[in-house]
Image (tube, rainbow, N blue to C red; front, side, top):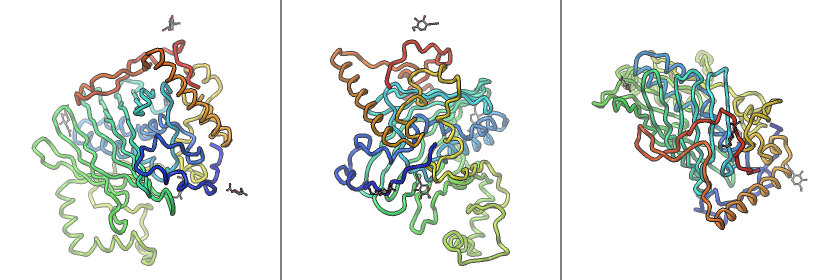
Length: 414
Ligand SMILES: *[C@@H]1O[C@H](CO)[C@@H](O)[C@H](O)[C@H]1NC(C)=O
Ligand SMILES: *[C@@H]1O[C@H](CO)[C@@H](O)[C@H](O)[C@H]1NC(C)=O
Ligand SMILES: *[C@@H]1O[C@H](CO)[C@@H](O)[C@H](O)[C@H]1NC(C)=O
Ligand SMILES: *[C@@H]1O[C@H](CO)[C@@H](O)[C@H](O)[C@H]1NC(C)=O
């Protein structure tokens, strides 16, 4: 994308002071607070660490698989780190596809409802090893100083060879200091990953930052079997890395760490530069204290240079609007890459982005009015409301057929 336009000349307070407690999707914010991606594209960022799913497929031990799945669930929300730009609300009927032959998968997503906003996605491996799907109903709320995002909706990962299915819900997310001060993002809450074949589960606790910021970004949890016996402890930070260790080793370490005062030393280290202990340079620049005997499950890919000028995007996010010559003819007319306001922002033309955003929203309103006058129901194209076979709850499921590339009856939404 083109470099970001500074937000300094815009007062968030003037816009938001009238809206405390309101649902944020109903508040019109100037486009400078956006990032040039649709929420559908943001969802596709879950796939950045697909190599972990491939790894899980290849493991023969079920507990080993579960811990890699847990790392995948954490890695899927890692791209949120420092991403305070607001993605564009998808228009009803908008779609996004992503084919990554190098990573062995393809993904399709569709905005299936506007009020409430619901986005459905379905990713599958090109060799029929896994399917990963879900629907997300992001509920945003403004709380005076912060914005809270509740990502309602279930993620389902099916490892087809192992006939296993895992489901979970993403953690809560909060953007702090939206009015004044430094913006920062916190993810918190309990994520339970369930193995539906046996009832075994992995419980991950995304910690809120705590009093002195000591717990910031920390994730800790364990895998347990049906009888609640702990099989592994999982720990790390969603911004950095995740490790797994035997529960006995973990307990022993915790006890000895407390005795030797290791805990307080660690805290000091994290929070100050005073302790210039040149013998003690960490090999890798990370703030997770590694317990001897742990296995690394995942480490984040560093962001590219200039990421800060480009909405703090990862390399993966930077590619999402790419439109290679020839691709345009293949895509349905509803694909995000063809959406004019996002394209204008990607190109750095904020005035155009703003006027196009207004035009598209107006067009959407007019179409809705017309449908209600004709008593017509909107019909979704690629997903249908059905029952998730694993949770038995209502869920949006992929109908199939998207990659046959017959788009003759797609709606004109741009
Ligand atoms: C902010 O507004 C002033 C006055 O309109 C203008 O001179 C300045 O360039 C703007 N700054 C940014 C960062 O857009
Ligand atoms: C998950 O379910 C499978 C059954 O397909 C079972 O063999 C396995 O022990 C379970 N493992 C974990 C860790 O959830
Ligand atoms: C990017 O990260 C920096 C450093 O934390 C932060 O100050 C800035 O507001 C972030 N920018 C965006 C667009 O989120
Ligand atoms: C494409 O779909 C339309 C309507 O669904 C159908 O009438 C048409 O025959 C299809 N075209 C091809 C080439 O299959």
